[in-house]
Length: 197
Image (spheres, rainbow, N blue to C red):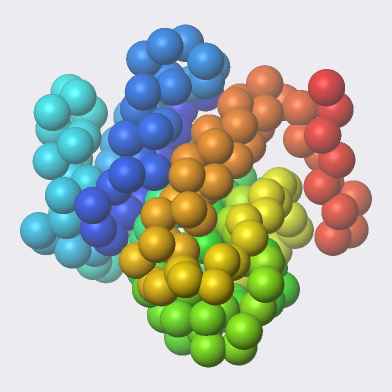
């Protein structure tokens, strides 16, 4: 069983998905700590409600220490709206997983987060969007891709409706990616991630 640390900035719906999967035994891991850079983030309350250590912390060095103290094997950025430093990345090399609400390399990088991603998709007139789970490297949304899934953009979609469709996909591929990581079924070769089922 691997130790999972989750970083959140908001409501934590992706966090809840991971909590549910670990409780069902579908992910062979235990969430040891949830950390948020926002004091009022509902994700912290989700952690408390599920007897998981919840920490509000904005200093990155302290976050790294908390993760180390809890012997974290994999760090999941589940709606964590802050770019992490190269130091953080190197401390947990190939052990940080992020979820992004578009098909990387489209509509990603600095400035593309939350609803801004979906607005960008609509403004551009894209017909397909989706979600991407990737390993985190020193860049913004530039790490090796673990898994992607598509969502079709309908003529009557707005930011809210598109966000809901993409969120369903996020939940599905994030929990699957974490499951594969915890079962040691992911390997990285250059920019390519291979699933060894």
